[in-house]
Amino acid sequence: MKKDKILKNGMLPVLMISLVLGIRQMAMTMVAPFISTYSKTLSFYTPMLAGIALGIFGLTQAIFQFPFGMLSDKFGNKIMMIIGLCEVIIGLFIAFLARNIYVLIFARALQGSGAIIGVGYSWASEVVNKEKRTKALSILGTFVSAAAALAFALGPLLHEFMSVNMMFLICAILLLINGIYIIFFLKDNRKINISNANVTTSESLKILFRNKSFIINNIAAFINNFMMMSVFYLVPVYLNNVTGEKGTWKVFLPAIFVAVIVMKIAVGFVEKGYNREVIIAAFLTAVVSICFYFKNNSYIFLLIGTTLYLSAYVTLATILATDVNNSVENSYRGTANGIFNSFQYIGNFVGPVVCGMFFSISQDLTWIIVIGVGILGLLVVSLNRASSKK
Image (cartoon, rainbow, N blue to C red; front, side):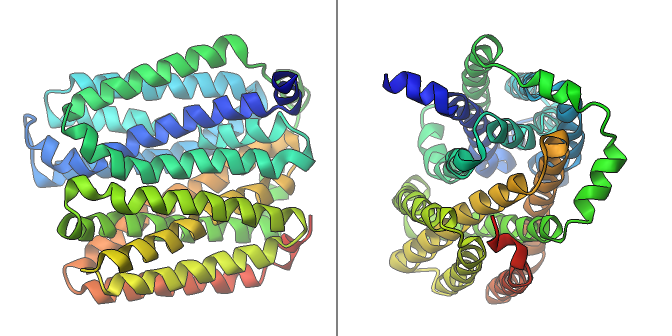
């Protein structure tokens, strides 16, 4: 009976879609701290090429989110999810086989080009009714956010037992198994999308960019991910000094556990109609959390700061995605999610680039810039009165 209820509510497909995106996110994030050192073992290595190998994934993610979302409106979420998964799996396998830096760069670019996050959000939004959409997207957001945070904790532990290229292979196998399940057991909404095939991309874009709430949510998503990648870029450096590389789990595991609880509480307030208030509170929390990183030699301060920050980030990632999906129609939902996730991944790219530019000049100045960006986000979402309406 319980299984029938889950199936009827559409939560089993949501869980499987979330698992795919979570494993994919973990595969991409888990190896990130080791790319620079792993690249040194490959032929034709240079520091610049190692940097490209690390960053190219985020760039291709940002570029391909929109076309994947647009095509999902025309051909269905399932087929685009499978195509994107194949790109990621092949990219992971090529990375496993890579023996020179150019092949690794190609593999990482291919992994990023399988930009299926937006497709996943669209699919999860459509398999449940509107009343359960916030819950569905909170599950999806939890998987993706938790995977990113846990990757920083589990990566160093796994690296003790296996090489970086073996980590690529294990992730490829896990995604392949998950992809097989999607192919044979998850139903597509293809008929809905075919009926909407007469809605042109230009018409969809006109509708979306006349929507003030949609534009503000995209800017907020960019800022949220800018801050997230800034934290994930800088905090592991501090943790290596305070807890050691193997001890990063002592901060990230409890932080993500608390963050999930806070997000679920926040979702309860959102369901009561307090979207705008929750988003403002989350941005304010994110700004306050950064202040704890000025005392970067303290385990307690790093733990409190990271716990507060991840609570804010996971809440924002979930609520902003819900706002976007509640404000669009199925006929252009994929396009909307593609644009939304492109803004997120541009934030992923710009955040560490800006931090990298200023970190060698002044660590405190770097955090002040991140705080300033967070305050900008707070001001932007304060203008979005529409987000408080469901």
